[in-house]
Every structure is written in C-alpha cells, then in structure tokens.
Image 1 (cartoon, rainbow, N blue to C red):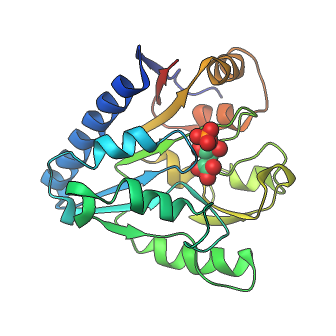
Image 2 (cartoon, rainbow, N blue to C red):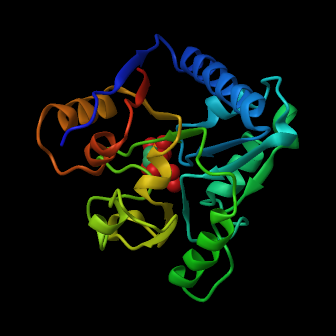
Image 3 (cartoon, rainbow, N blue to C red):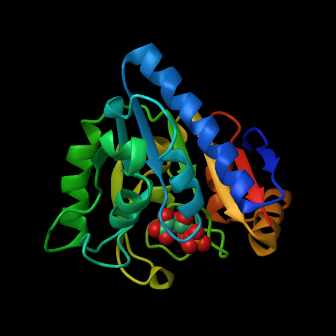
Length: 233
Ligand SMILES: O=C(O)[C@H](O)[C@@H](O)[C@H](O)[C@H](O)COP(=O)(O)O
C-alpha cells in the first residue's frame, strides 16, 4: 500500500536549503532533548550533505546530549577518503557540534557480514527511535545503501526486519556497504530526503509518479509518516 505522499520543500539555492534544513533538524534535536533528555540523528554521506553539515554544526543546542550515526557506510576504515564517518566527523562534528557523540557503522572485521554483526550490536544499544533521519538519493534511485542491484534488496527494505544494520553487496556500489535497515530509518520522527539538481528531481518525481521498483519509492511508501523532500537546483 502506498504511504502518505512526501512534502516538498523547495529552495532557490543550496545555501538556503542547508540553512533551513539545519534549523529544522536543530529544532527536532532540541525538542527531543527536552522530552527525553537526549537526541539521536542519522545522516548520510556522499557529496550532497556538506553545506547542511556546516550549517547544522553551528546550531546552538546541548550537543553533549546528541548521538549522531550514519544512514549507511562504505566498508572502509576512517582513513579512507570514501569513509562517511570521516566526512561526518570533519564536517558535522565541529564548532558547536564537536560535543556530540558519534557512533560509527564501520568496525574492523574480516568480512562486511562480520562488521555488520558488530555494528548491529553496538547501534542497537543507542537511544532508539531516531529523532531525525537525513537520507540522500543517487541518480539510480538508491537511498541509504539500498541499491537497485543489491543482493537481497527485499530483506534490506523489509519493514518487519528485526536487524538494525545489514551488509550490502551491489555491483554498482563500488565496495561492500553497511546500511541501517528500512524500519530503523523510517521510524524516525522526521525523515528527510535531501536532494539537489534537476536530474535527481526528475528521478524522484518519476519514482513517485509510477509504480517503479526503485528503492527510494519503497522507502517513501513504507514510511509510517510523510517524508520531507528538501530540494534546490
Ligand atoms: O554513502 C553514500 O554514498 C550515501 O549515504 C548514499 O546513499 C548517498 O546519499 C547517495 O549516494 C547520494 O550521494 P551524493 O550526495 O554523492 O549524490
């Protein structure tokens, strides 16, 4: 069954988008701290979130009560230029946000399967549910590490999954990955899809308009509440 249609938030520039998204996420984190004494945020890697990370890192709130984890991670150590952990630490856990606790998905292990088991145990101990999930999307309609060609994609997108972290193998992904599962991601109070550029807009519009099997559509359909799409040209 199709979920509630996502809500569009459009901006003239990427800087305006970053400022608005940072302000919205900061409000959600402050509210969570007020309500339950702590807040829990999952962010994406890749090239899009840089401006948003910079803006969010300057928001005044009690960052010592915030845990930040990743929507997904490449199976590489933090020393790799492809590490999402390294990106989040450098661009988000700075300024005011340097006080936040960071929970990595990557653990040294012989295989990504073993690494995912270690991450699942660690991440399970965090203050679920997430208060906010900030997803990205690739031009192929993947989000998190739900690549269209991923092995076992149905299990990754299973809304009834009891796993929190799973390994991913997909030829298009470059290297093995670790991802939070669909229910872990969409259980957040706020679910955002942050995309930029005309091409990604066309991809998500096409995915929403037709019964495509694209992973982004499955995530939006299976979210218990409407997601917020943040877009700028
Ligand atoms: O590790 C990653 O790459 C991600 O978390 C991934 O899901 C990303 O959000 C999309 O691939 C979009 O990436 P860009 O922002 O680089 O286009």
